[in-house]
Length: 227
Image (cartoon, rainbow, N blue to C red; front, side, top):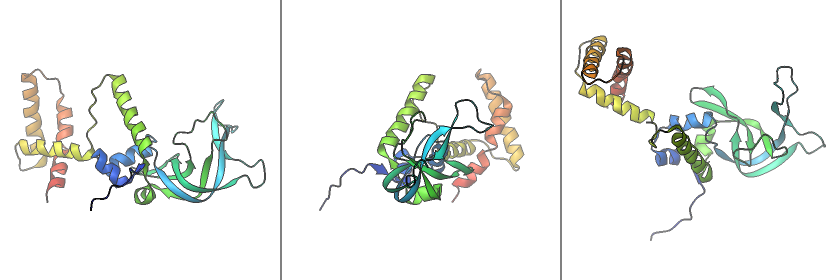
């Protein structure tokens, strides 16, 4: 018997990867750069934070910093139970980061005070997000719209940048189309010169160094496709 389930309000990490037809590193990259805010179900006590004026010597005029709210005894800790957005990723590697701050809002404005920013007593890694976190569909739609708007304003066509997997596939196709050589350097030089000569015949502007730069990536891409 077919069962109809209600539409979930979020996608897990692997589900978003399938939905966007991209690599895991593609998603990690936009999370680390704060373009896409992941969510985590929280059921613990957290410290309440607010944006306050930064009065340190190195601070620029009017700059803000996060500080715990300590005006009244007992106000600094709050018990949280529900989905929260992870904020302020700290980069720990090329495709890794950690989180200490959460909020009910995906993109809390700094100019408002008392908006419910909270700090974990523990560190949340990007691996934790991949294992037990999610991406709210409202945040996914906001990210997609932001990308479309950016491309429209720049005058570019609405074609997504190729993912790492797609780039490797294109490089592999190029490698299979080009002639083989005994040594890798011979292969690069031989085909780079041939491509450059063809580009000049067809009045296409591309430098020999640019051609060589891309051809150097071909052997690794082809090797990665071998089974």
